[in-house]
Length: 217
Image (cartoon, rainbow, N blue to C red; front, side, top):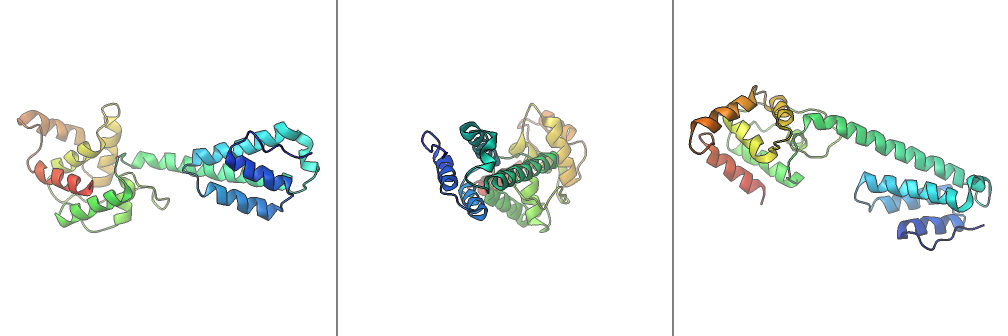
């Protein structure tokens, strides 16, 4: 009994055709890895894995593993392992998020932000990759990052406020900012400059605005 490859998405049709053609386990693994290399997210890959598992069982039932292609059982085990690996990676990334600021910058923009802050004397030229990760980049090598802020503390607060402001979760990003720059009571610092001058911005904010604008280009 062969799988009907009609009525499935293109990726599933390709895999099911390979199963029908009695491809080897290594060929099935290679085909799967090639397909998922073009997918945009871990969620999409997990969705594909679940579709393969569910539809194979729906098409031919639990006894499929002993019929036609002896490699199918091993292929199912391979898919389960891949799914588990992806879920562990996502769990690790979620855990690391407590030490990362959320920004809308791309990694090249984060790198440019670092370079401009270094050039203007706000931070030292140390651990560029760590800075990129701390401001929302993806890098499994990092779980934390810190550097010394070398100029007025309220400008570090203003930088984070401009890039990461979230009125629903301000306590969270101020705590992360403290871990990154070693500056305590960031919320109080913001309240200080917010309430005592007409611009609601700290002295020297123009340079931070310029740096952010340049980094976003």
